[in-house]
Length: 345
Image (cartoon, rainbow, N blue to C red; front, side, top):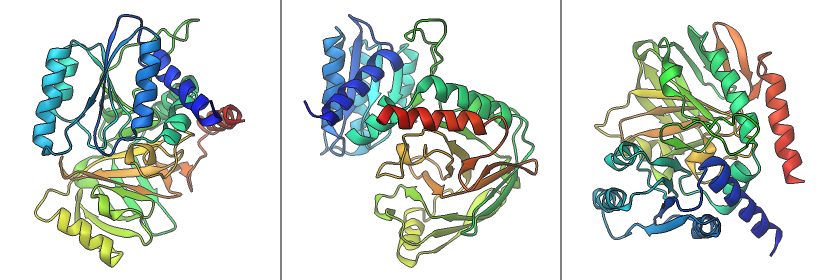
């Protein structure tokens, strides 16, 4: 067994035991599609089965349209009596009736998107979830004091808005499972969740004004990446009113969104020390110190990432050029990054 195989096995064990808290006799579903990393899926499946978990791997039919894939997944969930589900598909189903039904049935759900093996190892196996929880809690505590936010980059991003009171209470997407007591396998149950390392919040819609220069990543549509030349979005009263910048990529985005709602839905801050601007949005949004913006209505919802962005809250600098500088976050952030680097040695 080479080093990557050992790391993948370790990450799978962390995922199965310490994140999903799956025990012997539990039922577990993993679903993939044609763009999934099957090596990662099979490693998780193998780990779960070695620990006595009844595991099923569903490969969604690539010949089906999205609506029919949803029906296929929903049917499996309704008839599977699963205790936990892992999404490893490139197509996300967390905003659909399939996840709603799984939640109603009391199933724990975790989306990793179509992460590849290297991303899974870095973001799950080598990133300390206890420290991420501590950092995420401190970040939320800080942001709850926000009345106004500014997002700036040297590339030209300048967005200002007012915060919705208590939006953080309802829109935390990090969903970090809290370890309590001496056992690392004692978790607080939380709603359906995505890969750890992100907090999302909403702005008061009509107050969002400015220019967003997307220079790190944007998805979907698939054809946009990589971004070699920034895409520029003009925002007025909470909606994107103009798309410019890179001629070819801006045209792709404009055509994809033609006639569709372009309302700003959320902003996100990433803090997973293992995340990189890779080929998958679920990882790219969690790059440590990154800021992203989501706009449009599902299924025409897209997320764009600003590189080396700064965030000011009530005029006070919280993030400066991608680095957490607030007094309550700086040391915690350095500890989180140091632990990550130590885990890779």
